[in-house]
Amino acid sequence: MSLGLVSYGGIADAGETSHYKNHGVLFSYDNRLKVKESKEEKTITITLEGYEDLLLMIQVMDIPFLSGEDYAESLVKGMRDGMASSGAEATKVQKTSRGIAQKKRKGYTFDYTLSGVTFRYTAYGYNSSGKKIAVPIQYPVKNEEKVQPLIETVIKSLKYED
Picture 1 (cartoon, helix red, strand yellow):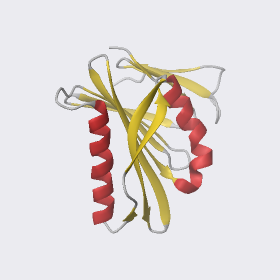
Picture 2 (cartoon, rainbow, N blue to C red):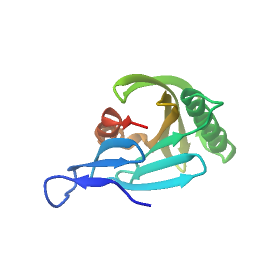
Picture 3 (cartoon, rainbow, N blue to C red):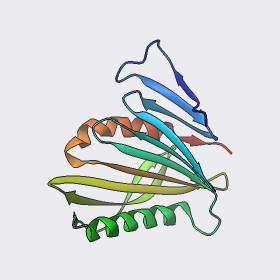
Picture 4 (cartoon, helix red, strand yellow):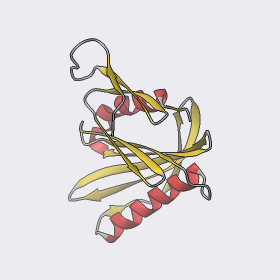
């Protein structure tokens, strides 16, 4: 498995931007995030994490029977049900939208509190070049101000080219 990572500006310090390009997925990201990829049967998952407990994933799937938005909804509802059954206090799932890959994308979100820490879990989904793209994001609500710029860097620059 190879990562198509390119860093500009010499040695990568915290806060600098690098670029990811692999599997038809392109985006910019803050170097404070670590990038991993995994590939399962018909799904490629790129995971960014490691700064202020932010977890951001980009999933490219070849699932013919489900739209990207429907997949995002199932991710959020499944996560919410799982958190609630594990004893977390979870809010109701709500619809949301956000600019991703230069278009307004629909998604779903909820908050859950576990061991005194409240997390926000959101997933967006859409179709692109015959594939389904899902973007699940999770972070502690107390870190929202710190992680939002890192999220924006990724989702505003995200492109998928089959």
